[in-house]
Amino acid sequence: MADFDLIVIGAGPGGYVCAIRAAQLGLNVACVEGRETLGGTCLNVGCIPSKALLHATHSLHEAEHNFEKMGLKVAKPKVDWEAMQAYKGDVIGGNTKGIEFLFKKNKVTWLKGWASIVAPGKVKVGDDLHQARNIVIATGSEPSTLPGVTIDEEVVVSSTGALSLPKPPKSMVVIGAGVIGLEMGSVYARLGADVTVIEYLDAITPGMDGEVAKSLQKILQKQGLTFKLGAAVQSVERGKKGATVHYKLRKDESAHEIEAEVVLVATGRKPYTVGLGLDGLGVEMLPRGQVKADMHFATNIPGIYAIGDAIVGPMLAHKAEDEGMAVAEIIAGKHGHVNYDVIPGVIYTTPEVASVGKTEEQLKEAGVAYKVGKFSFMGNARAKAVFQGEGFVKMLADKATDRILGCHIIGPGAGDLIHEVCVAMEFGAAAQDLALTCHAHPTYSEAVREAALACGDGAIHA
Ligand code: NAI
Image (tube, rainbow, N blue to C red; front, side, top):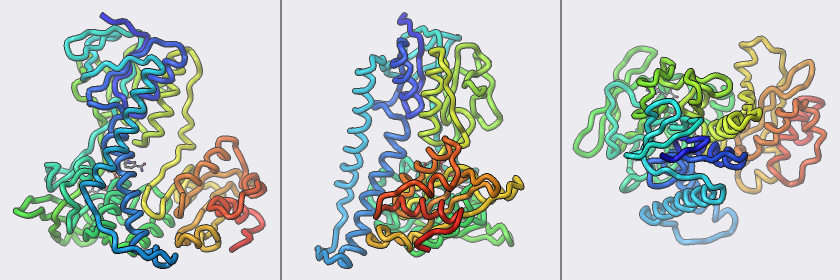
């Protein structure tokens, strides 16, 4: 029986980061992973492959729509789907092998197989029993579906199936206007599919700043996506060629249907803890299937911790990574901590959308006196030069103290720009701190500074 200080179950962004950090802190660590490759959903069938397809199809869009404007004359681009899939595979392979290398470098033992916890401190992988003073559950999540909708990963697909369709469909219905729906809907719209997104709520991307959500919807509509909002999907029926989606408009209960070659179900994900044996151990669970963990990621069973999508909070790779590092530090006797007030969220559409901190709606509801500094990318020379003048930066600051409370960006490079604001918020900065910081010209980042200036005496280029 092998003996470890820590066994991490799951090698997604939460688990592998936890394992590496714990090893760096001197612990003898093993990480159990049943997939053929490390990296979990994010690297194998999530964040990374979807970004490869988003990049490839964005490049296609550029070639089709913007090359001529820049004096570039090329033949009409053709899509070789197999080659695009191979590119996606290379991107995945490069990253998953990278983690294998990091495991070796940090002397983390990869236990290959599916784990179950047979008793506190005892983990079974296949026929082998291993022992550890500490166990971290980092088993992530899986797609959830709706009553009346069966995912077959052929015609009715989850995000996993949507990444590996045999060919780009001519028509696609996306159920759910959340992050997955909009990212994958964008991919297939750019590849020529007629994409209709059906969303239960009256706005896309629930929880996002309302102004940004409206702007994103308008831009995506211009890109060819159709939205049916306030529409509850009732069932999906497979036909000979594709499927029929039945939905009801919530305002008048009227019934409608729409046919498509492929239906993508993107209505959220649920924690994945199947086969771990948590019931038998008496690990407390929450009603929505998450493992109950305290602020130090400890479950009710001593020595068993949980992080990432398996516990409460936004189902984001970087949230899981931060929790992985924090729990490793706690187990090593240090003071791991995650600041849940400063966790950015990014949607990798074109333009990108990024946000951190409070939305205007949340501030209103909390009765906080705030001010808004807004700056359009139309006033940003760099964005205009690359045909990305759509969108804006919206900075929210405390009316009395000027402290930054939130920031919401829709525009070029938003997913990178947001981190300037994250750092500022971690340091408790005021909008004026950003406004008085010299920003290189010409960069997209200047738009962030201008929004900060707009919280004070005014933006220059507005
Ligand atoms: P989501 O929670 O972001 O969106 C699901 C959408 O489906 C919601 O807008 C919801 O109102 C809608 N919906 C639910 N039931 C419906 C019904 N019966 N009819 C019509 N619409 C319905 O979930 P999504 O997009 O599946 O993503 C899952 C998780 O993965 C999320 O937590 C997301 O944050 C994460 N993710 C993050 C990415 C990123 O950070 N870029 C990329 C992909 C996923």
